[in-house]
Length: 507
Image (cartoon, rainbow, N blue to C red; front, side, top):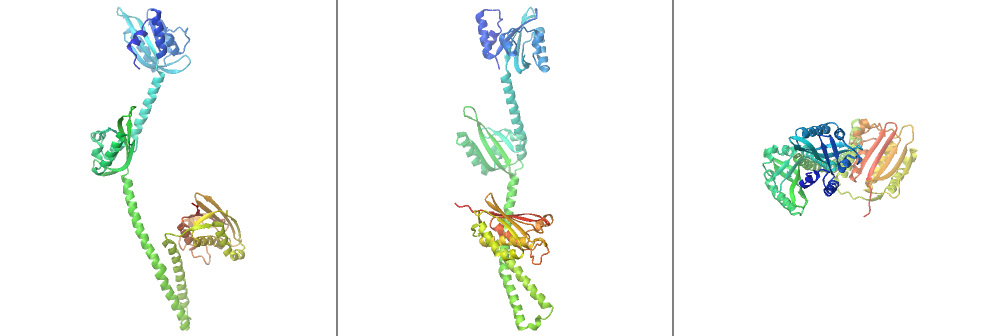
C-alpha cells in the first residue's frame, strides 16, 4: 500500500508544532491506521503516537524505549531485519521501509509496515522520524490470494487433462505439460501456434462458431468432441470444454480450455462396435442353427422312432437280441435331447415376448396346488409369505415353469433321512420382486460347482432322474423376461435361490 506524499509530509511533522496540525495528524492516523514514531539518538528517547500504541495494543501511558520497541518484533528474521535497518538508519543515514510481523502486547501476531527516515545535520543523524502502519488484513489477504494462485498454478501444471489459456484471437497464452504431451510439442513450440494450426480442418467451423457465440455473450461455454493434428501429423480425438473469462466490466479477456485426449477410447469403441456387429452376426447364425435343431432334427427323430415301432410290429423276432434294446434306448434319449434343445431354442428365438401382469401369490398357489400330491407323498412342509398385492411382468407359461422347477428341485434334493422343508418369501426392491425359495436339503458346493450351476447338462447330485436341464432352462426363462437368479448354498445345510422378477407398474 503506497502512501500519499501529502500524508507523509503531515505525518512527519514533529508533535511539538501547532495544535491544529496535530489534530489533523491524529485524525489521519485514526482513519488509515497509521501511527508515527520519533527517536532522538542523542537522548536515546523514543516517542510513539497514540495510534502507534494502539497498534501495539499497549496502554496510552506506555513509555517505550528502543530495546522494548524492538522486542515486539517476532524473534528471528523480523527482529533481525528491523534491528539492522534501524542501525543503518542512524549510522549510515539510510531510509528504510519494510513489512514485518510483530507480537502485540496481548499476544496477537500481526503484519505491520515500518518506515524510518533519518534527519541529518552536519553529517550526523540527529533524529529518526517514522511511520507505523497496521497492514495485517491486507497482507494476510494477499498471502492467501498468492497461496490460492499458487495452488491453481500447480493444479494447472500437474493436471492429467490438457489445459490451456487462449487469447481472443485463438493464440495460446499458456498451456500445461499434459497438453504438450498430447500434441507432441514443447511449450515453446506450441505457443508459437494457434488452435487453428492444431485443429483438424473439418472441425474448424464449429470451433469458430462457438468462439463467436461466447464473445457475443450468447453462450458462456462450449463442449464438443473434435479432432486435432499432432506434431507427428496423427489425428487426435479429444473432448474439448471451453469457457470465456470476462473482467469486472463484462468484457472478454481470454478463453480457458480443457482438452481431454480420447483417442484410445475412440479406438476401443470402434473395436467394441465391430465386436458387437460380429457377435450379432454370430447370434443370427446360432438362431438359424436353433431352427434347424428344433425342426429338422426333430423330424429325423420322429422317422427313427416310427421305424422302430414298425420293426416291433412287423418283425418282432428281430427285436429279441441284445442290440435292439440299446438301439431303442438311444433313439429315446435322442428324442429327449431334441425336446430339450427345442425348449431352449424356443426361449432364445423369441425376442418380443408378450409379458402380462401376473399376481405372484396367485400363480405360486397354482404351482403349489399342481404338485400337492408330491408334497403329500414326500411329507414336505412349506411356508409361504408372499404379499397378495405383488404384481409382476412375466409370460404365464414361463412363470409356471420357473416356480414348478424350483419347488420340485427343493423336494428332489432333500436330505435322504428327512422330509423336505421349504420356506418361500417375497420382497420388493428397485422395481423388482425378489422371490426367495429356501430349502434345508443337501446343498451345493458353490466353490466347486458355482461357475457350472446353471450350465446345460450339469448335475451335482447322484439322483436317478437328474438331467442337468432344469436350472439351465429356468435361468433362460427368468432372463428372457428381464430377471436374474442369485444363489446361496452350503453342503448339508441347504440352498436359497433369489429370483428377481420385474414388477408391473400401472401408468
